[in-house]
Amino acid sequence: MKLLLTSAGISNISIRNALIELLGKPIAESSALFVPTAIYGIPRGGDIVRRVICGSLGDPFCDLGWKSLGLLELTALSSMKRELWVPLLGETDALLVGGGDCQYLTYWMQRSGLADLLSSLLDKMVYVGLSAGSMIMTRYGTTYANHTLPPNSDKSLGLVDIALHPHLDHEWFPENSLANLERLAATLPMPSYLVDDQTAVKVNDGAIDVISEGHWKLFTP
Image 1 (cartoon, rainbow, N blue to C red):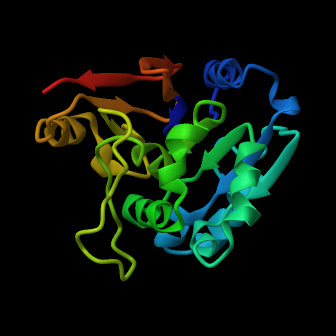
Image 2: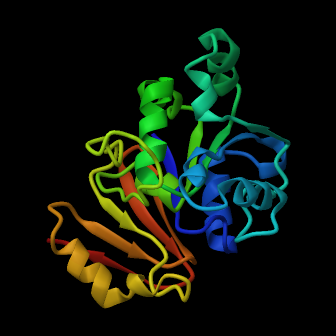
Image 3: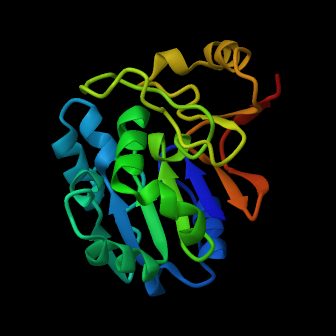
């Protein structure tokens, strides 16, 4: 299983090099699929999707110079024949999963059937998460609750036995101060990685490494 769990995307050369290492080849020779679904769980989600794809919002993600870039919208998959989209995943080098609402993203990962395929797909394909796209692979997720999903819907898939708390000390998220995130981490039973936007967590066949040109903290309960 190859995961690159970022806070804000490929924000520096260290994280970019970690991505290339996981891919095993240059980005320019790699194909990618972008999953925007989580972004629809927050206000103005459609415009944010456009800006992330174009590279006019946030750090590089879709606009890294991929050999090819496709769009995989999870809300459409449950109404499509699997032979239309499952083979596409097998031909893809990187699955780019954007941020937004963890609960909304987790629900559609499960509803579409993609969640059931991840374990086998990630032997070959690299999963690259951004914010909520990273969090859902751990045991802890959040929600903005701008949806009509059942309130007991899962907020994460729990494939990695940690919690990830992105955007540490970010000016847009004053609630994500170190003190606040430590208080939250103290309520969770698993280790928590508190990471800023210059930091990512790399998971390669179970080995966890922190890639950072910023600041982060590991909180162990």
